[in-house]
Image (cartoon, rainbow, N blue to C red):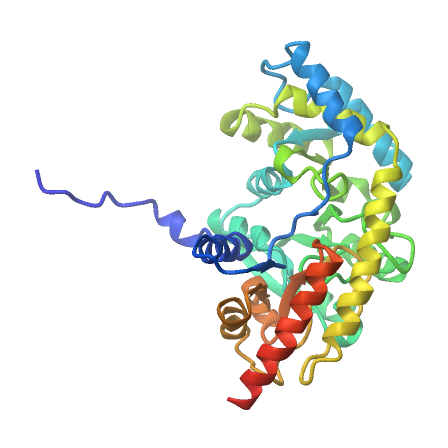
Length: 395
């Protein structure tokens, strides 16, 4: 029988990827060839999960907590999440508003799938975490770019937001602190956005996964400050705050009717989140906070080191990000094709970074670097980049 390629669904052509994992795979392949690679491409804390969280998972395993749970999550964890949200955002929520997922990505996908019809429009900051645009287009809805401005520390103009709204607009996505730029919304921004949202009756997805990584001012939560819970969905999780990326634990807080729909999607796709991981997440939310504070302090020190070093490289300018653990330097004076430059840095200097345009067209001319790496490696990366970029400019 002659081999043939069975046709994939048309929707697969609309599904994007995440460039960080693509570059990571290329960097690992170079390492396997004996190359020295400094990894600044992947958005993952380089710290270990705190011991009390690991201990909770071990206890859970020994207690044989390895069976199915309700799709929305165990009640003990949802109760802990409700208390955490009230403590950190000042908003009282009930457990029927909470859905637990194996990572925040499935939560984002479930919410978008539950709300969007073909032809609906979703306003997405540009540049942005790729999953928002990818899932929006996958379900046949239309992403609308909301430009983030370097001059405003990668925040957007409220007037531009309002001008982007049409009768088909259904959702506005917010992400603060922001991936990939590290930009952060102010209380004034939040008040103005909330006013626009109320007037136009749209839903906000507020992705606050980096909420514990805010440096120069206290974190301002849209979910906490907008005072509009019926039109707001909070996305959060354990990956970034407690260095639990591989554990896969995310959660969402939303109106109960949307939570019911999102849980139905989770039930029909992944069934549930691992029980022992949920038990560990309770310890993350309720346990000691010193490790989280120590990570944030170290990220701040690294941020300052990397920003100062990048701004010393001729042709590079870098704003100081307010949160997350990324910098987003402008390299357009060296090479406007950021993908080409990122490839050059990987192949020539052994420094793995991401091109800004992989996060959207308004990221063109920028690079994203994660400072979730040691001070020693950051200093070495800066030295390698300085040399390589000088050679690039001279070529």
